[in-house]
Image: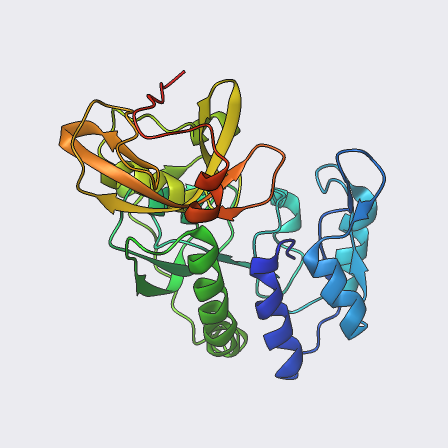
Length: 303
């Protein structure tokens, strides 16, 4: 059960290593904004390519048809990776060895919808994946294994998602074998240490220049590629795709160079390296500044 690109290497790994996949569950296709195009999930796409049966119900809660289907299937194990739906409690007993979730954090840290984004925005030193048993309460089930990677200031959510996805695709194989052979040891989480990664809202992307440089970089990296960190200038929105810490001095929000270096808190600054003007394509900063209204001496407010 999975939906985004993050889940694709894991499904491919199971398939290529000979695990019999009875069925794949994924979210239904989404209509694009103007309704002209139907966008299949990445997992639906790879399921079709590999000729694996897939199902895409809009909801599992109260869905008797899917309950009956899964019960009849009598599967050994369900593996859930960023599926995007809560698995109803009455479904959790429908496979012999339960439902296993691959979660993109070191549990109990960052339970919830946006663990990778929140970890980067929080300037954590490390993140990873946890392989856990699904229980009724969100991301609170016992964990059999966790695998860590280091984080650094140059990595964004897309970079880390790809790394964790490849790591999970490799590590899940040993875990499945242990679970099927009843060798896996599931250890209860320390619930008193749980933190929550609530869903990202677009408005969180607005950059506040009165924050410190590191926090702004964390926001830019954490929200890349979507929904993106942004600022407004003269009624237009500018999405910051990549930036680094500078060493300029000036007023908060002041542009202090011809390469879009902007002052933030504590006499720190941010050098923007890649940017996207509303409705335009992404640009490197040199190309962008050639035709930009944002000049040295401009003040970018937080409004």
